[in-house]
Amino acid sequence: MTRFSHVALLGLAFSWLAACSSPPAPAPAQAANPAPPRESLNRLVERYWDERADPDAALSVQSLADSLAVERRFLADILAIPRAPLDEESKLTYDIFRRRLELDIEGFTYPAELLPVEPFDGMPLQLARAAAGVGGRPFSTARDYENWLSRIDRYVGWSHQAIANMREGMRRGYTSPRVLMERMLPVLQALGEDKSGNVFYTPLRTMPDAIKEPDRSRLSAALGSATKDRLLPAYREMHDFIRDEYIPRARASIALSALPLGPTWYAYRVRRASDTKLTANEIHAIGSAEVERIRAQMQAPAAAPAAASQGLGAAELLSAYADLKQRTLAALPGAFSALPQADFEIRAFVPPQDPSARLEYQAAMPGSKIPAVLFVNTSPGAPGSAAPAIADFLQEAIPGRHLQAALQRERTDLPRLRRFGSEPAFDDGWALYAASLGGDMGLYPDEESKRAALEGQLKCAAALVVDTGLNAKGWTHQQAVDYLKAKLGLDDAQARLSTDRFVAEPADALACKMGELDIQSLRGRAQQALGARFDLREFHAEILKDGAMPLGVLDAKMKVWMEAQH
Image (tube, rainbow, N blue to C red; front, side, top):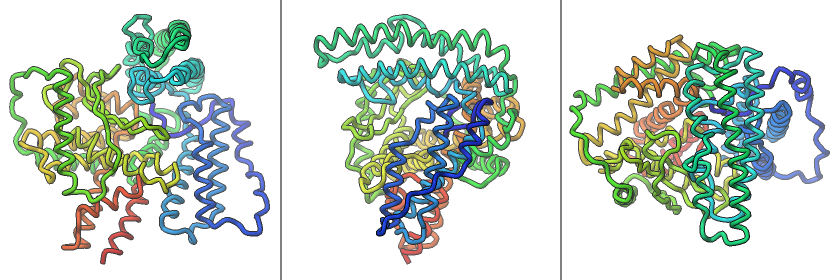
């Protein structure tokens, strides 16, 4: 299960939980001339960025205790800063930071650390992606390889703790759905095989020529040994444990609500993902209406598929995306008054575990000169290999994720929490909204490309229905599969894969449509309020200029902006 935050404690943790609940130590006496609230706030948020814990590493009782203590200490500190005297920019920082802390602390109520493995995300897959060069720093220097060796050691420790936690989960009645664990087994088996083609040997095979002797021989020997003797056995150990011990006791149910604390846990994840006060039933109704609205907009059924065309070669596909990038860059000034300086590269990749992925955006690494990258799946026969997927490009690159992330990171005056932080509904919602701009920007040349953009909208709308149906309304797995086949036209295998993802990551899929609906609503309200004074370019600039934020904070900010335009 994807971890939104550090989460609840193991059964042995009641003693330290009580200790963590004790009042914080008294603050030191204030200086004669205390710092202004803005300076105090900025220093506090910067200190948090340095001290915050890695949520994926917080699995042990002690690490959970330490993480909770940090969150509570910083919440007490920010509550001690008066909000009223702050300027408007600082109030945004205050509201974003306070909400993050409160949600993180609430997350400790729910024991996600007992469910650390799922077949779509999480540490085992993230490490494989990093080995393949996706989702992390590239391997270019001896220091990169030293860091990778340390990361292997950390993963082995994580894996042992994860198995211990899963055993504790079995004891306490918190197990993952059997259908997910059965899907996980072949993934772990492939990642644990000691074969030259294993993705974990990629860093060894691709060591750059810039790494010279004696470092080259030393690192090659160390990396080969660490991979063969420690990393791959950890994946095999996890595989055997799940196969022999866990699956026989995994639950047949699929809903998060079937677990102890499940209904409130799902409600929490809904609020975390979508930043809404709406109930699951209300979101379900919104999704159902959106599905029917979009299907009506698509009008006639899709034309019969044309004869399969031969996919482009990798170089040809990358070149086609480079051409699309130039056309999009030329069209951006018509819809955006503020554009980022940072560029992004377009590279080929073969997804190690998800061959259906078309494009994937990776933002630039904080504090480094490593650029942002749009990865293009160039696997033979991959979806979209015959021509660039325009809507996906707009969503993942420009004016979607890259434009939003780059503008945010170029705000060097913001604390790092805001420069490099994220909010699911804002980030995913903006990306989906960005794809809808292709028509206005003249980038959808035919009905088929417009229909592809609507299909993206439809998928996110259907996610509202299926996710809430599975986790809050008692839908069966087959109900979800049947719905996706009927509304999206998926085949059985695709529908089952999508359903399993909703089961594995409850509420995560709500972010894109709920965020997009909010941005569309803000645009409609601004057009109504400003009339002829409405400027789409300035509206987009205002939405993006302060970075990602909770939708409630965004709505309040945009209300102030609209009022100032009169």
